Structure formats: C-alpha cells, structure tokens
Amino acid sequence: MAITYPITLPTAQGFTSVSIKPFSRVGVFASEFTGQQQVYAHAGQFLICEISFPSMKRADAAPIIAALQSLQGARGTFYFGDPAWTSPQGIGTGTPLINGASQTGQDLITDGWTISQTGIMQAGDWVQVGTGSARQLCTVLADANSDGSGNATLSLFPRIRTTFATNAALTVTNPTGVWRLAGEIDFAQTLGGMTQIGTITAVEAF
Image (tube, rainbow, N blue to C red; front, side, top):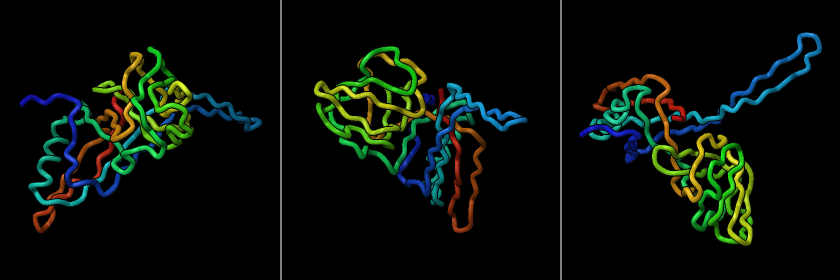
C-alpha cells in the first residue's frame, strides 16, 4: 500500500516522555559602547517536539519502527499532539470556528462557542486550527471569554502562518499538528529481546 503523508504514528505503547517547546526567531543587538539593546521579533515562530519511547518487545516495536522509517527522514510528515494535555482546562464547549477568512498573526477571531462563558479557553490550552494536512497546533496564551454571540478572540503561539477559510474548524479535544523529523533515528536491539527506539526530534512542518 502506498504511503500517504501525513501519517499517524502508532501510540498503543505510549511514551516515556513528550516535550513540546516553543521557538521564536528573535534578533537582539547590543551596542558595544553602551550595552543598550535593540530587539527585533521576526515572523518565525514554531514548535519543536521530542518524543521518547519505552523499551518494548519486537511485536510492539515493529509497527513504530516501520512508521518512522516510512517518513524517509525529513521527507514525510506525521500527525502528533500532546498526549498529556488532550482536553482544555477551559470550558471549551460549543462548535468553535474561525470567524473571518485570511487571518494571520498572533490573534485569531473565532465564533461558535457556548455563549457568555468566562474562561471558554484558558492560558496553556492546546487548540488545533484547521483540519487535514494544513492544520496548525497552537497554545492559547491568555484566558479567553465568549461573548453573548459566542465570539472569542484567541491569542495563540505560534502565530497563524497560513490563511484559513471562514468557518474552518477549531479542535480543542485531542488536537494535533503536522510534524517532520529533525534528525536521524537510532534503533537498538537490547538483551532479552527488547528493542529501544529512544528519542526522536521533530519540528512543525509548514
């Protein structure tokens, strides 16, 4: 069967750790005479992910190894989200949608939430913007409330890079992003028939 990207990694065996880190392209220049700093925030913002797998038996390791090999290094992409924070701390109810096409930047205007809710989403919650291979995984940066019409503006990291159509869906339960491998993978066969996959590093694919 032909491989179609993005793929979904097997998750039945779980992970020993997952770390999703923010990265911003920021330039800082300091005067060699006064030490005064000039800071320039570039548009580049993205997430980096480190995923560590437990030691496992061959039957459990084989599907994961095959999936990782199918990526062909940085060529292929895969879906992944934070397995520890799969639902929001905020209320997160309603049918949230993007309100207005062609939005980019840090703030996203949305609607479709349950009306008049304080903390409809809370700082630190994950949200998936859009669907399919164009989706983007973001962190909510500040508590957001819905108004009497179910509207809410979300401040997000990373900033929205791709324009989505109005009424594109937002996902707050089991949100995922699209990733590609950022390095090589080492598989080790250990004594007792156990396989150690180790840690892989991935970066947002965009």
